[in-house]
Image 1: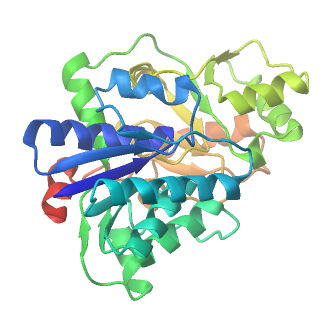
Image 2: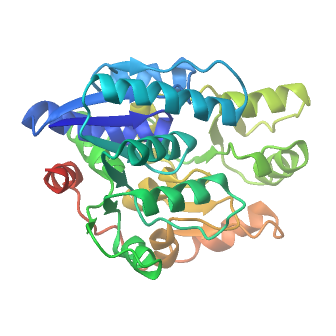
Length: 341
C-alpha cells in the first residue's frame, strides 16, 4: 500500500515527525512525503526534518508567487502528477492550512482514500481561512481521525458519522518521544513565553499595546519571532521593552525546553495551546475563539478579551486553578496506522 503525507507548515512537520518515526520502525506501509513549500524558511522547515529524523521528502514543491490562489494551484497540479506517477493509494493531510485543503481536493478528484488528521476541530469563525479549510477537508475525507471526543461530536453535528476515531494528538506523542530522550530539561526559570504571528495581532497598534502591557510585569519574556512579525516590528520601528527578548524561531527541541521551563504562555498558535495544557503551563490565547476547546474547558487556557490590560488579565488568570489535565491517547501513530490499514 502506497501512502502519501502532504505537509508544508511547522505544525505539520511536528505531527509528521511522530508518525514518520513510527512508520520507519514498524513499516506498516510504503510512506511517501511531499513538502508543499508553504513554509520555506530553513528555520521553519529544513531544521525540523534534520533534527526530528523525518524521512527526506520524495518531492518538494517550490513556491513561485506570493498569491495564495496561485500557490494553491501549483501545489495541486504538481501533487496530481506525483500521485499518478507513484500509484498512491491513500493521502494523509494534517490540520487546517492551505496545504491541507490542496491535498484534500486532489485526493477527492483522483478518487484515492483521504485521511484527515485533527478532524472535527472547529472555531466557528468563518473569517479564519483555517476554519473553512478544516470544514471542507472533513467533508471530503474518507477516514477522520479526531484528537478528542469534542471534535468527534462536532463531526456528528454536521452529519458525519462513518470512519471516525479519536486517536489523540501527534504533537503530544512527539513531546513524549523527545522527553524520553532529553529528560525533563529546563534551561532556566521565572519567565513567560510569548508567540504571536496572526495578522490581527501583528499590526503596529496591537504590538505596541502588547509590549506596553508586558513592560508592567516584573518578569522577562522570551519571544521567538516569526520572520513576518519581525519585519513588521522593524519596518514600523516598534520599540520593545527591556523585559521582552526577541529571538529567532527556536528549533523544536529548544522550543520544547523553553515551554517546559516557563511559568506561563501567551500565544495565538494552535498547537502550543495543547502542548501547554499537556505540560501544565497556563496559556493566554490571543484570539477571540479557538478550535482547542478542551484546554479552555479545563481552565488551563483562556481567551484574551482585548479590553483588559494584558498585565492585569494575566495576574487574574494565573490565580484560577486548572480543573483537569490532559488525559487522551498518547499512542496516536499506532492508532492512525491501524485506521489506515
